[in-house]
Image 1 (cartoon, one colour):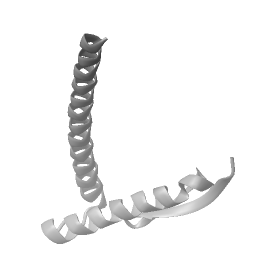
Image 2 (cartoon, one colour):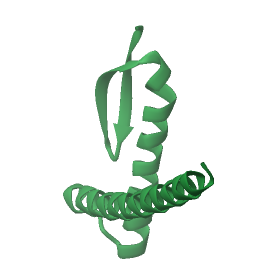
Image 3 (cartoon, one colour):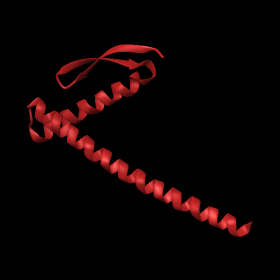
Image 4 (cartoon, one colour):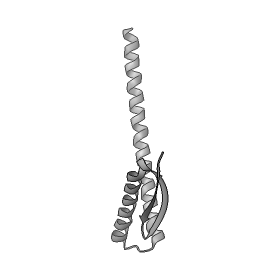
Length: 94
């Protein structure tokens, strides 16, 4: 497993980190998404305080994560009920 030393700029600061080579693109993309959200909040709400901007991005990201968890749970329940229905139908045929 090869690790790379990269510097990721988030907001106005650079953060050194070591990442797996295969994760570099994903991590850089995550940094870009964070910076895009910071820019959007800065423009929409006129915020300049770095801590306020990062707090809003963290809050927004948590809401998105919770929504995705809910979707995943609903999808899992749908799959589970479909498999159970198919199993029941197979049992009646056997």
